[in-house]
Image (cartoon, rainbow, N blue to C red; front, side, top):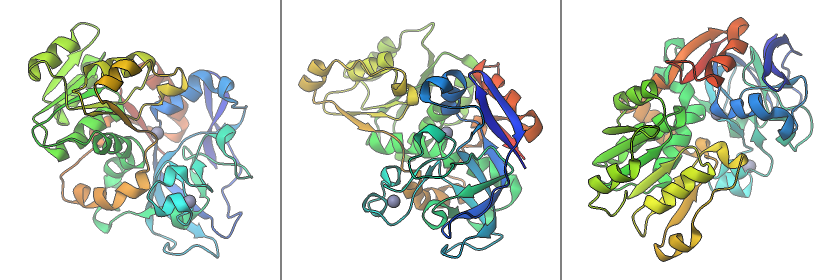
Amino acid sequence: MKGIVYKADKDMQVETVPDAAIENPRDAVIRVTKAAICGSDLHIYNHGEAFGFCDGDRCGHEFVGVVEEVGAEVSGLSVGDKVLSPFWISCGECHFCAKGLQTSCVNGGPYGFAPFWAHGGEIQGGQSEYVRVPHATGTLDVIPESLADSASDTKTLPLTDVFGTGYHAAVCGDIQPGDTVYVIGDGAVGLSAAHAATLFEPENIIVAGHHDDRLAIAETMGATHTINTSRDDAAELLAGLTEGRGPQAVLATISSPETMAFAAEQIEPGKSVAWVGMEVFLGAPEIPWDKAFFKNVGVKGGVAPVKSYLPTLWPLLEGGKIDPSPVLTHDMSMDEAATGYEVMASRQKGSVKVAITP
Ligand SMILES: [Zn+2]
Ligand SMILES: [Zn+2]
């Protein structure tokens, strides 16, 4: 079977990899019908060696597919079920899984991040024709019947990570009806966070980014205002919309040192900055903690426990209240998939996120 592997920095390739197979009675094997490349995969593409990636490590943590085989101790899943896998493997039984914080599962971890897998054996990647899912009962969710056809894959796939993460930001931002919400970032998570924010009925949703083409998509997904911060002054816009008090929620989908500092400076006193971006790996946030103290500002969020949100999100998707599919701007075959990394890394015009159809 074929799958994407990390070769070296800036070099991802499609290679023949060992067939996925049951290695533990809790495993399932999934035939992937659609996968995606994530902004966090670009951190591997650009800096994999620094994170400990080696030639041949498998990539991808966002996929939907069909159950091909189940181990003897798997319950609640049958061969032929259409399933979605959150990006984080979780056992479903430990203290944190029971609390709905599956990304702190003591037996789990993310797919496609070999250097961070701490539970023995090789962790595979979802950018493959098939993938072995450890702790299948705890990890996988069966996709509702009305969304189980392949035409719906572009709607369900973003729930594996980017929409689930955007929703986590919206929840952690504690958005109230009538609020002004400031979303930092026009990548797939930023667009998803803006879309998720609509569910909480704020008055204003401002999406800030550097790409006019992506900001145009934000407007179709719920943004009431967009701002290209390479040209325009966000602080001025926010002050004008909030009588100078600042937004009641900031959804920080980049989490770089500078954007976190800006978020903490801008937010209304007593409110929380929700942070879900992966750039925290590249540099610690420069939050002005003294100002944050006197403003009673909180910082909430982190890596999203997508699994715990799925029971809420499935009916919203089935009922048409959400449609995160516009974040998927490209769809490539497995043979072309390595090109998808270049499309995303170069921020090719019109690109947000690349799907892969094996
Ligand atoms: Zn992802
Ligand atoms: Zn667990």
